[in-house]
Every structure is written in structure tokens, then in C-alpha cells.
Image (cartoon, rainbow, N blue to C red; front, side):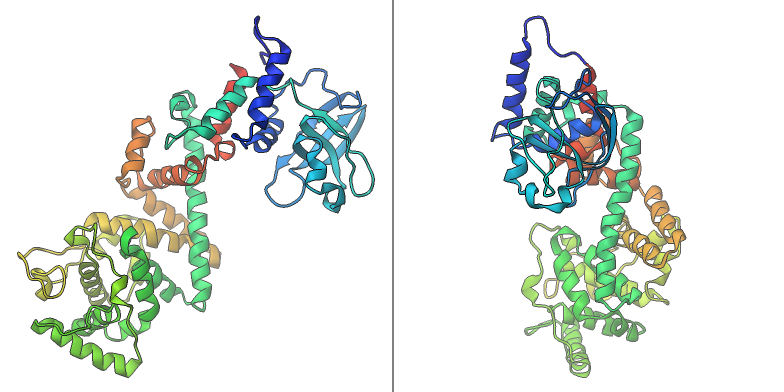
Length: 454
């Protein structure tokens, strides 16, 4: 590693590094120092403890984010003696006491205290002074400058100017991992819902599907509707399309007031009877959002489409889960309400006749955001790998979503050719780039390691 240039003194490098690490306006020092230690991005020649004993790092340990020391399973050789245990990292040695480690038995097994600057002797709860190594003067300032750039960047992808230098194979492998990470996170949400619903798999799918049907604007009202309208009740009347619509629109709160048209009046009358028989209470109609939506995406249209799906499905939702290829699922979701909805987008407001077909993009969104995470979750819950594989196969067979996030990735030379790739890129943007988690990102790690070699 290149330490200094001809016109830069060692003290200049130390001052620059100190400013970057300890500047209150740039509070990322300890995380960065942990990364630098784990990745070995420091000058190892003639490494010694603050007591002057020679130090050899056999294994730096693994960063862990739970309580206790920063890195576990480290192995170091100090003065010829090999030690195995934990490593604690601080900007200053005195941070050990400031953080109360001298009173915490979890720190008795610290075999090395790694610091940027040594300013105090410390001890463990059992009275031992852990060996300390100071990294000041051993870190290439280019790594610190790169980290500062990434952490303070206002770009939606902080590393955009450097992305062209990242190995495409590294990006591909990282995106494969991020897809699984995204599915695992969504599966946990489904599992939580599953347990809350008394381990009822069918009811869980009902909730997941309805929430996804609402899209980003009406997800919560649709989730509320699923809570007040159980699937079992809907399926009880699926042979009667008008009663299915009465239940959906009534429980959604759209049949309140005094409708002037004949069909809404008939639905209202039907709903009042059903509500009395089953003790139903609707969602507040004020919960629904029509603003910022095109008429085909109105919640009333979505409910009419869902009524058509339920009335046309012989086995409820089961047929939506039976395919590895998305085409049959898309066909099942290709429903179109008729009758009153031919010339209405909402009650009491007739318009020009038009089809209200669910549409391919909406069907794909339902598969991606409800069926896939449900299959993945149930595969995990029941230990049935074919369902997890089916979820991945569905994503691989679907086209990539179209949105601003994916257009930006494409402009940076990272296009999405399938829903599996687009989902991974969305996860990267929302869970890493947006939160500046560059030290936890395989792309950021490669960039930091590259900065250390240039």
C-alpha cells in the first residue's frame, strides 16, 4: 500500500486521517475502523502493540452487530504467544471506559483492543489490561476520503461515479444474495401475519393479496378490509357474484349514504342483510384514497375486479399457487368485471363505456408482491423447498418492473432483465444505498479495497 507521496509527510497523513475519522460532522469513524481492521486495509509491516510487543494478525475476526465486542473469533499472535477471542474497536482507547466496558463481563475475552489513537490504558472487569494496537499512521487516506465521499453523497446511488470499476461478476453475485435477503425479509412479515391469524394459511394469503392489490396508495385500506372481511365468508357466497360485490363494497364502506342508481341500491340492500346476519362492521370510507390515481386504479375498480376473480375461481386462491411459470397465474388474474362497471369507475358517476380488465402489469405486481413472498414464507414455515424454488422461478420468469429506481440503475450500466434482478436492485437501493450502508455492501467493500490498492 502506498503510504505517502514525495511531498506529503507522515505527520500530514496522520493529521488528515485524524480529521476525517474524528470530525463530529462525519460520525462514521468507528464503523469504518471496524471495516478497515476486518478487511486488513492498514499497513501490517512491523505491527506492534502499544507496549512494543510484535503483533501478527492471523485472523482479524468477524464483525458482529449484536451486543458485546465488535469482532468475534479473532486469532492474533502477540510476542510469540497465540490468542483467540474477541477484538474491540474504538477511535480512542479512552472510549473503552466511556462506553462502560470496564464493568461488562462480556469484554473479559477481548484479546486485542484496536484503536485509531491510544490515549489511555484500560482494563477488563477481571482487571486485565488488554493488549492495544494503534492504527494511526497505518491507514491510507484515500480510503478515508472515499468513505467520506460515499457517506456524504447526495446521490441516490452514492457510488455511482465509481460503479464502472466494479467487477460485474461481483455485482451479479451480490444481487443474487440481495434477492434472497429481500425474500427473507418479506417472508418474516408473512410469517408474523400467519401466526397472528392463528396459523391459517388461506386467510394469510387473503390478507397478503388484498394488501398488494391496493398498491402503494391504498395498501393500508385494503389490509383493513381483509381484517373485517374473512376469506371464509367471501367463499361462502362466491356462487352469487352480487353478494360477493355487496360484501366487498359494503365492508369497504362504499355502500353508505343514499345511492341514486339501481345497482348500488341493490348492493346496499343485500349488504345490510348480510351485515345483520354476520355482525359485520365496515372500514371507514374516509380511509380510501382516490387522489393521485388514474381511474383504472381506483379502489372501487380494484374491488370490482377482485369480486370477478372470486366468483370465477372454483378453488379460491389455491390455483394461484400451483405454477412455476407465471403465464398460467397471469391468465387466472386476467379478470374483467362487467355489468354496472362497464361504464363506471366509482358509484354514482357514469362515464364512457370501457373495459376494466385487471391488466398484465397489475397481475405481475400481485405475483411479485404477494404470491412470491407468500410461497417463500410458507416454504420456510413448513420446510418445503419446492415452494421456495417456485417463488424464485416465478420471479425469474416475470419481466422487470418499470420505475425510476430501475431506470437509474440502467443508466449506470446495471440493467434488470427479469423481476428477480429488479427486485434485487430495489433492495440494494432502498436498504443499502439510501441508508449509506456502503461498508455492508459487496460493491462498497470492493471499492474500498480498490482504493487501498490504487
